[in-house]
Image (cartoon, rainbow, N blue to C red; front, side, top):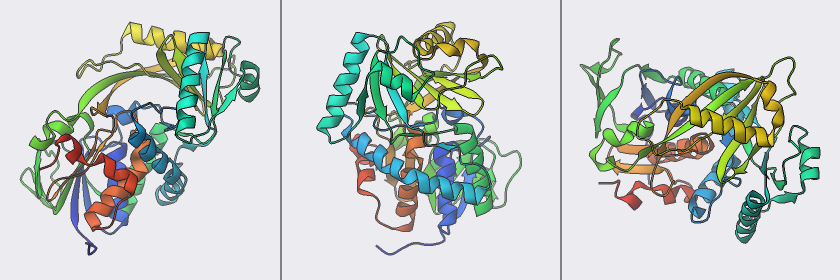
Length: 382
């Protein structure tokens, strides 16, 4: 296929996927507008934990997602290096790895099942006793009964990454249209309101060669072929800040089941993020008392020292989820691409998503792993 250069592209959505895609499209030579009322400032990306952990989060039946996530994880170091260079800001990448731990024998059996499953796929994790785990991570408490070391997993400070992506997009020449989209069809994006009209706007419509829909849980409302393809899954997170009297935050990302509930603790420079509950609750973004209680109680089982930290923020985001947890990544109709439905893996899949969209817009071949995410698998293509 011949390469198509210098096309005008409108990217709808200013989260990690929209920003990554807009930045890489502009670097590839395309003229890009990003449409979002507040890019990098809200939604699921702002509330994310920032784990880049395809192996630790693997699940039977999601082998295509594991392959896609692993391929994207391998791209992250180069993606982060380029992001820091282009933006002049920290990329937010952390490379310490993940410890998947258990607090009782039943949860330890679940981790043994996970390790056996990963071994059947040729994925190696290191099984450790509780004593060995505490030597690796002194912040772990005496109640930890053992677990797994996943040294290849990474993490990011999600908010640092979002700021770097916004800056890199600006440096690359992306034009920001601070408005919400009402609908998309081939060659046009209809806007709800453009308080400060930008060059190239015709009334409340943006004209372009290609539209990329990367609007998270709002994606299904923008094009009839995507209606019902993405649903919101609520997740609550907590941000903790270390105080002068508290022990240092963990060096590793710590995660695991507690009575069947998954909890994770992701280190930050000044503390940690604890997450995340998971509810099918429609578009509800209120933080509940029960959610905060469960997260703190479960996290304390793994790292007792959190009781001395300051609780500085509670938040809830809506994960854009599909039936099989794979994103929708491909053509919806001529002139319209979708890059949405990343569930809990938006940051993990940002590099391969942006690479795939650039390939599709430019007429290049895309990675084999990305083909499993084509929207035609769920009817999301005309």
